[in-house]
Length: 435
Image (cartoon, rainbow, N blue to C red; front, side, top):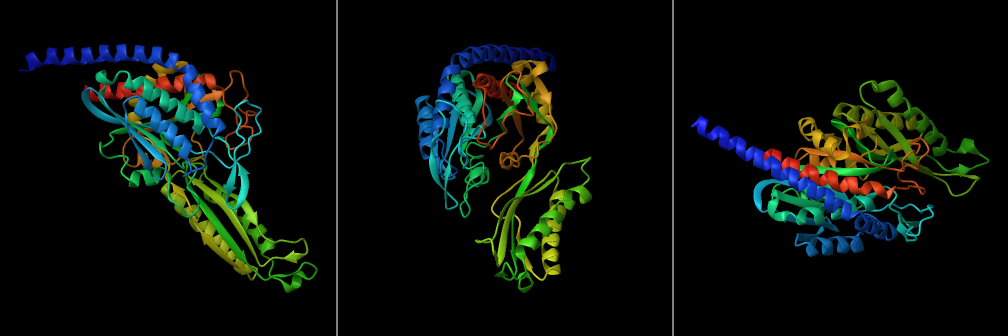
């Protein structure tokens, strides 16, 4: 029997490989033809950004596009998420592809004809809204992928699940949302997902390049809140007070010793940052309390526990030393696991990225202390999260505006590579699984 099966097996493999090669040629042609359409989608999203759990207009555009392609689309997932299911004509695995949808409370400063002028309320304040992290490009790219793959539906060896996710930047305080909520609502089931791929545009990586890292690629994150309670007094009579401003200053300074004196940074990076400090209402009144908020970043469970314990100890004991009290809440509203690229899957799919972008343009990168809730999907199935260049050619990564800033800018010519990369990862995984 072996002598009969072996040549038949080889024939099936060769036929599958030849078919995949043909499909990938189609991907190149169709992705190039979609370039202007993808850019137009991105510009529309950019001009009309919406904050997390409020992506109503955005979701409607995405759902209608998927439905126009004959893709079954479910809306209202985890508040405003959209999930499309494309069933191929041939049996095979279920490949999930994900894009995030939310903008940020940032007022745009870039002089573009499609710059955001949107204003809204956020945490009780009027703020501008901007796609200052590139989620507009992620959605446009995945819409392009959906159009390409749906056109070859009968030749697909498996099913593609398109996940358009709200609130990646974190749901508003008191609300649920993001990848964690989508997983809880069953996005990885019915049909059950085998593998997931995602990308993130990067404004400080040259267009045409892809960067990646096996294993821990983006940090785990917990936000924190510290409230220091003292005793109020007239600013002219500080000896009558227990000054929470002075105590808070001491706490902030002491927190910096956690990474510099407790974490082995030669093995894994870590970050302790206080980004918000609020207290007082007048220059000559020592307030009764001060509220601080910040973020912790880490790459191992051990480092997370160590950092969390030390933040609590330093804040509480420092406050006690000054006669004050400190309340510490970690996490305060959000916590994401480490974004971990399955090492075996990364090794398997790396040739696909190299063939798509050119081997010289696929670059191993160090871990990133930014965080991503894509990690919740990777806790369920193997996944790869990679970075797509969005900086103009010849730009300086050190001076290019970074993400989450009013001057964030993307070179749109790199979007087509994103469409091709996600399509080819899907096709090659399906072909490899079939073998």
